Image (tube, rainbow, N blue to C red; front, side, top):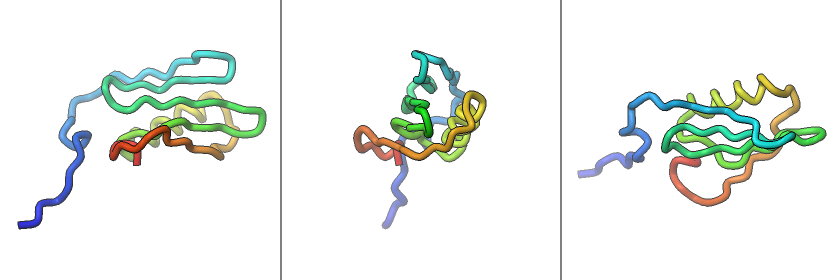
Amino acid sequence: MNQPKVFASQADLEAKKVTFAQISEHAWAYTAEGDPNTGIVIGDDAVLVADTQATPAMAADVIRRIREVTDKPIKYVVLTHYHAVRV
């Protein structure tokens, strides 16, 4: 019997308290209680996102929050390591 592969993040349906905090002049941190953290660096001409989120909805929230602080294009995404919730 073939069972679909599932990820731990699919089973966690509880609402998460999300924070988006400026941690330096050009850097922001997106955190969500146990879900992956995302770092944002706003450069002179573009935005770098370090590590992505577990779901399309959370990824959209990261982008929305970035757009609240800059209109520079998101040109770079860095995955610091492999985990299924970062894909």
